[in-house]
Amino acid sequence: MGQGALLTCDFLVGLIRCCNDFGFVPHPARFPKSLPSFFINFLTDPGDTALDIFAGSNTTGEAAEELDRRWIGVESNRDYAIASAFRFMADWPAKRIQNFVDKARRGDNELRIGAPEKVLF
Image (cartoon, rainbow, N blue to C red; front, side):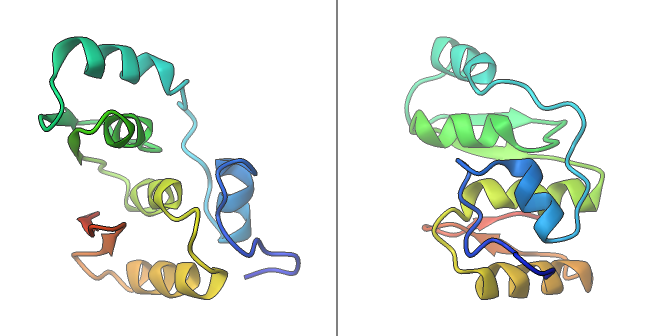
């Protein structure tokens, strides 16, 4: 982590800042959470599963969680998938986030985040 790194990945500070602090390029096609929220709310019921086959920065996963839905996000770019996990780490200390990033960069095939834990890949 560079000098002045975040103590947590608080999303109020923003995805871009968190990506910069942990050495990731943010996904270029971010969109407002209200877009997937509208469709998830309209097309699913609480407890259903939302599938996002182009997860990117995982806006859809975050929206699904807030609407009490499970979610599956598929992303072909490993760095984007890792960085998308920052959305779910707002209360994690920097050391725990760095451990997650280090493990992910080593190429571990399955990483867990959140509570209850979610499989990232």
